[in-house]
Length: 248
Image 1: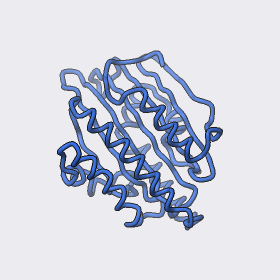
Image 2: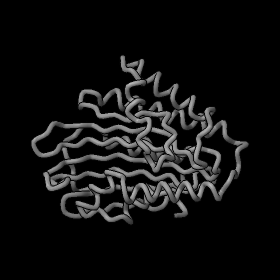
Image 3: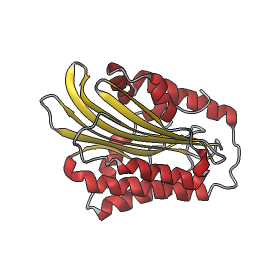
Image 4: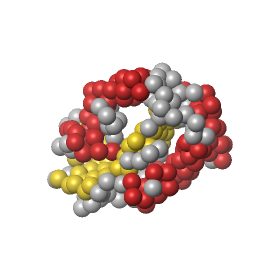
């Protein structure tokens, strides 16, 4: 990527960590060719795995320097990954970590980690280990998960297909080590969920298609990150490689 800023979080190496995570699930040969694009104030590195367990697992690191958000100058670094299992009864995963500095403002980190209900309602047996992992990470750093979950609950994230068992909040640069730990915890919990889901093959594919379509509609009409991307000339096609659900 030829556009970079000096934010320390999320670290560029985190993209390699997530790629290795999906390689261990779908296989090293499951990845499409890497996509790298840049234009003006932004650049992006995008990877996508497609395999027998995860129908699609996309990830991207996007940098923006001297871009704009609603007319104000802005610098942003975004790490985002979304995973979509083949089985409708197994939840997907979303992790989004973004550091941004708007003109005249302070540096802000936005962090979101959650499960995605592909059949409208994630099972409690899946939500519980994910929440436990998030809570353990919070307690390890002297934080209260309840505060972050209260901010998430009822916001209708992902077209109300978010399981609301993770966390969403705004943080400061000094919270970077804590958030690195949260990413690690989320990935570990999700691997446990996938490992315990071997017998859940198939599910209601029609319901899954409806949920995925709802999520994509929410992304293209309400997602703040997509709005910012469009304001700075990042094409929907690029976001689709890593972000949009498969099959819609």
